[in-house]
Length: 166
Image (cartoon, rainbow, N blue to C red):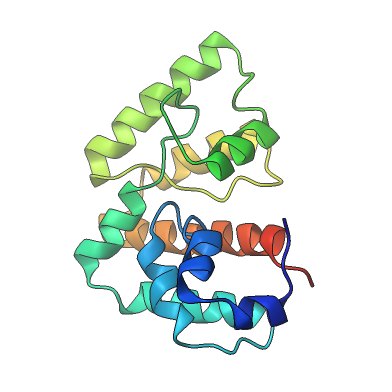
């Protein structure tokens, strides 16, 4: 169900958080905090204010947000939006060999950085995902934290556009 910005601005906090609490992967506190920044002029304004909340978080909470994201190609329980995003790229229908390769990369990445590989995969191909996975393994941890937060911001933007009418 899509809502307009006007409807969003009129929502009580509980309804607002219920609608937007999963935009940043099951981190409803971001929606709760941004509710006080109403009114929003449009979805871009809302997104910028949500990202500002994330940027103001202590590093430990930013790491928690990164850790809230599922590993790519995982068979584990994940948010509906993550299931749909991974399915849209075909990660739910990959060959056993590619699945094994992704699982090995997931393990290596988590051992290297201490959190899962996060990428806004909407509109990507499995080959693009694999290229980014392998390329980003060579980055520093600080660089990967910044990259993961940027990717999370992109994911949130896609999700907000799915929820809010233009």
